[in-house]
Amino acid sequence: DAKTTQPNSMESNEEEPVHLPCNHSTISGTDYIHWYRQLPSQGPEYVIHGLTSNVNNRMASLAIAEDRKSSTLILHRATLRDAAVYYCILSGTSYGKLTFGQGTILTVHP
Amino acid sequence: NAGVMQNPRHLVRRRGQEARLRCSPMKGHSHVYWYRQLPEEGLKFMVYLQKENIIDESGMPKERFSAEFPKEGPSILRIQQVVRGDSAAYFCASSPPKQGAHNEQFFGPGTRLTVL
Image (cartoon, rainbow over all chains, first blue to last red; front, side, top):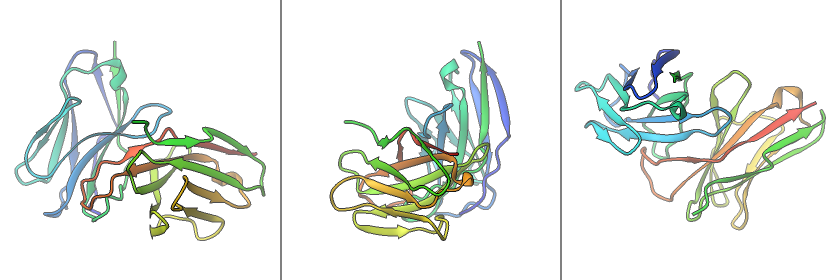
């Protein structure tokens, strides 16, 4: 699986937007971009995924660069409950095995 | 629809004992994955199973660890003769029976194993 690079940590204030970047310069044409997050003492939770086009769901938006070498997870209004480790994962296998990196620790200040 | 269930949530074992971790996937899901998270480390894939079949065990330690997903009942991750280095959080995930690189995986709350 291709490698992703994320900042170790980011901070935000409550009710402000958060942009979490991910670089994946060696992405292949068939790799999907997945985002999961892990709240403290919990299992990971799916956030969003995409292939080429920008995606929106009730949790977040995913903006994918035109060359697909980077993407950004956007939380439109951060809440304290969004404090978590966010993982950007590429999956090019046929059965969805996930390879987690170190992720980005998001701290949300009240 | 109940989520992925894991039990026990906490398990304490002494060195040399056996640990059995159970995972009940979401209803209708036939794919199960096990991941391990060592203290202060990231999640690592261990094994991927479908009903009665091990599809990929490339992340499983070569000795003492085994996994199964029988036709009936939960998936079991078994660790024989546990050592202190096995202390970790073990997460199970399930996904529905469709192929594709974009299957969403649903994770359970994990079993936290402590080896004394």
